[in-house]
Image (cartoon, rainbow, N blue to C red; front, top):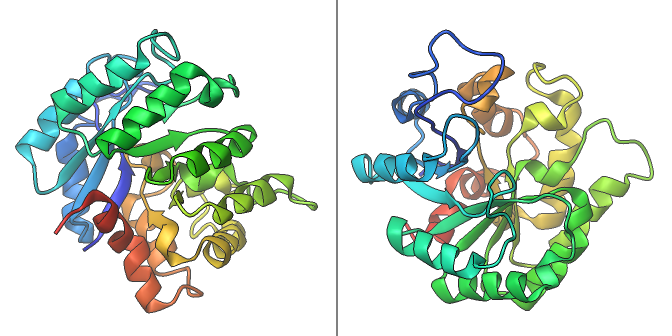
Length: 278
């Protein structure tokens, strides 16, 4: 089984510059077409209530309802662009979203209030995450990682998924402070890394197969092992740089240092286990 652990779908294209077909460019049916064409079985829909899409959680739920064998929804809960970001009542909003959308996980994009994990609200938020058995899909900069390691150690039952190689950059020079901060997370067994966002990691977004980023992938593989890496396309934003197929083949074809049995875990086995899919 191949599972894409980070995709988006919107009923109106949210990005600038504008596209000529904003009402169809980012629909879930476009994603499903790419999945079918490339043999991808399931996608995790990471909801994002960004420009033009305040109802993206409801749209994501509708996608999961219409395509229950193909789409798993991770709702946007208090992400950085929302009015409710880190305001009182986060626990109630998380519990309400989990019940309303029958969630297996949620996504949370962070700003720079690095002490929130240790606040009463933050701790209660993740206590509820643990109690509900949810996956926490986190978009956070490297400055958050010391706090994340402490948080993940406090809540060992929560799988934390860090977006897009956790902010690694191929052009980083010695002493590799960013990468080393990411690699420290490998000591915490419930922190996972998404092998996605090659266009962000590489110094040239449109270069394929992102050769300059492969040393980053190798370091992540060597330190986290195959059981905590999960492939993702980051569709449809990936299409601004490369194709959906290339997002898959950058890992499947061009990461020759990954053993065949490990590749099966990275391309889907790990997410299948975390999601509890048969």
